[in-house]
Amino acid sequence: MPFIDYSKKNTVKIWDGIHGQLHHTQQLTCGRIYLKAGVELPEHHHVHEQWTHVLEGELEFRIGEEVAVLKAGMCACIPSNIPHSGRALTDCVALDVFSPYREDFVAKEKEQFPGA
Image 1 (cartoon, rainbow, N blue to C red):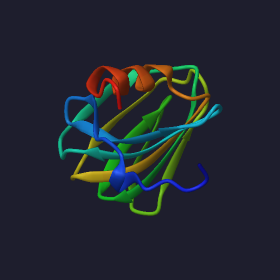
Image 2 (image 1 turned 180 degrees about the vertical axis):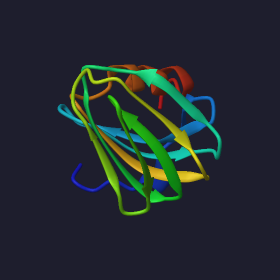
Image 3 (image 1 turned 135 degrees about the vertical axis):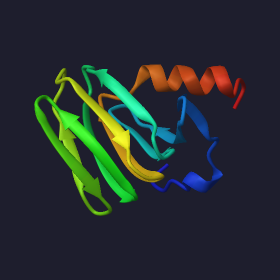
């Protein structure tokens, strides 16, 4: 499937205050992600490389010891296993890309939308 229409995909709750539509390939997970103003993503790390591109809003991001406020058009590139955290300063829309694909996100989709 070379073309994805996120508006036709189920909206998955990823964490409290964070939801989005996801698409998975054999190598990647891509998602259009919505974050509510004020939501905090606690520090964590994962094996996946992550690329977060802010489409709308302002997102404070910490990667290792570096902190930046990302605005529309800016992105964060997070290497594998590097601690990172975030806080939505406003309502945000972001494009998240992970490699390899997120098995835990696949499991969330199956749990929330069995048979889809």
